[in-house]
Length: 156
Image (cartoon, rainbow, N blue to C red; front, side, top):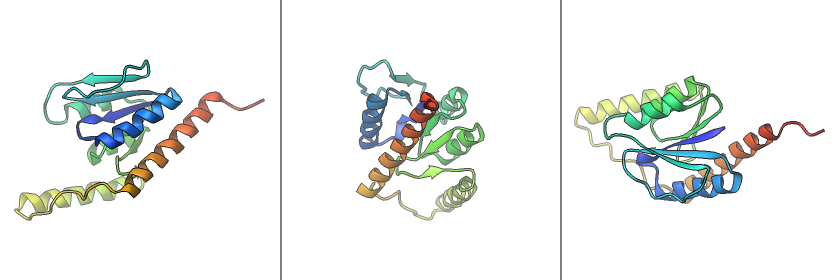
């Protein structure tokens, strides 16, 4: 299992949670962004800078992700593509996207986009709460623990 981070819009506090988790577990994590992101130098922490442009980072993640990898993104269309490739998608707010929930999320996203295009002021997302940070960290820990158990195999 590898972790891929859609890092262009990943909040710094979430990036710090991810870094602590991958330093603790040794799981390989790649941050993908169109601008430089300061990261510690570790063998399992990587940075992939892509060109600026619409969905360039997303497309690179989709191209590289494998089944059972984890992608951290708030981009719902990217999450949908990731799920189609049998990988996992987790939002920085702690929402674990699933095949059962992604269609409704896409529909709501498209509805809100239509509203904004017609001039309705919808506002942005609320400030990330402590509960959402905790939800994210808890989901990430559970996913990493499960991956670690699977990698170590059954005990004899």
